[in-house]
Length: 347
Image 1 (cartoon, rainbow, N blue to C red):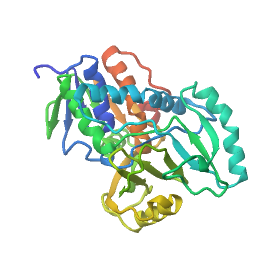
Image 2 (tube, rainbow, N blue to C red):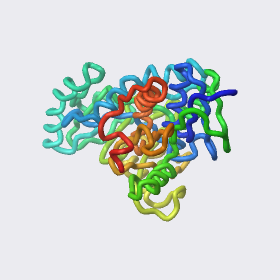
Image 3 (tube, rainbow, N blue to C red):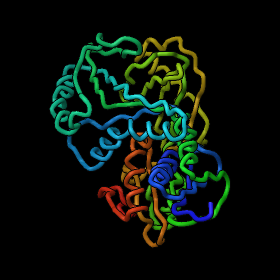
């Protein structure tokens, strides 16, 4: 590639998605990943794409909502361009309700979903008996069922994005390569460390997560969420379960009894998984910004350099919108990044 308009550093979901969106719009793109595609948190296994509760609406919830709405077209475009599947499906989500107070609170959010989700998804309280395979145990016999939530397979997203970028003439470099044009730093926890060093304050940190893949073919049924536990059925006959949230840890990539506890909770919540074999145990460190929102935009004091970081637990769900606003900024000079998401909000 003779001349590059945009160099993206980092082969996680943010970096790949920004590179794809720029290439899709006709920019000449080079993506540089020093280790391997999905080497960090984007090489995980869970792949839940789910909204925040539809109340106390704010810019972060709106951004994530817009990203979830555009996800079908975004990931469909990736598959159409490169020919590789992403595992995306809008399967919805079930959340068991523990008691009458929880059920009343959930019922109170129906109107908020109708207002804020603009007809793109439904939030309702329903009998758990309406659902079959993978239906969770619910003390009240009731669940929240939302139809906005989706899933994608993290192990498929990276290769699919690489294929799509290459199909549009983009270059993928594993190792080192030169920076040309605008440079986007999408380098996860290392990037948050670089920002912290540059500005003399902690702008974020890594939070370890442990998760697992179980051998169980649930079909196309809703994912399950309860007390921080995610159970996500994938199209390849597996179910992903996760995850822990460890601010302190000895090793970033090892699993231990904390994952055993997660698996025990998952089997108790969804008895269908009682005998499902564990096919893989996974651990990795996710980049969490101090603001708890993605860190996007121009890098202050470094002309021509930009940041796309801080996906934490919602990076896959946020990726389509992150790609859109970053491409708007890089290619059109149009800044649509919400307040609270900007690099300067962290520093």
